[in-house]
Length: 264
Image (cartoon, rainbow, N blue to C red):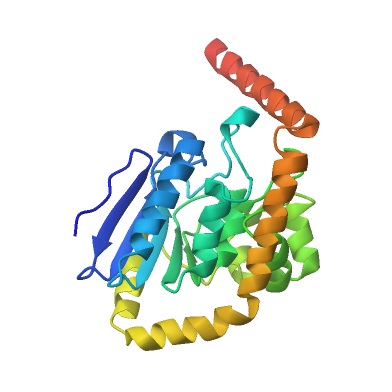
């Protein structure tokens, strides 16, 4: 098995070719979703999906962060149109018949949070935290989360994340059902991989059939939500006035922080 190689995504195959570990590999930016990283991630996921022996996919992040959402780039650098890398990435996760495990190794923001409901199992380190600053950036929910989060958490809790931009701890995320289990920091990823290895020893047909029974009733709703969200982001949100103002303010704040540090 020849593994694909990328600059911003790392793919490893474990447990007799049955477990794939896919790692966001842009630690210098908190594993934010730069357009190049998105393209590589779609390519990596397509490759993993094409391997029939692989039953489990574990997604984690390099460095201190899991994923900090969209990288703040110029509006012509990212596309949310149907058929774009972002749209396709969500479709792959929604349609996958493999068991998807998120290993949240650190703080998660934006898409790093909203995508979690597309995974079958989510494990977190104790000191992770979760927030979705969509309104702050003049954006809107994505990753089919406009449907998945109200169903998973209830409308009010989803609204506290998406509308109010509240930040929640790993402990609260576990309590409300966003995280399955909190695992110790020490050897965290090894522990998640052990879960994947145990699952990989299960009857493959049973794994697929059980997941299909759970996912089939909601799959079309998730696909439709992904379409609607991407249409909204593409036509009305990303690159438009509210977003541009938010990005401009963010860059001003970052510049002021750097100037403050240089004076110390």
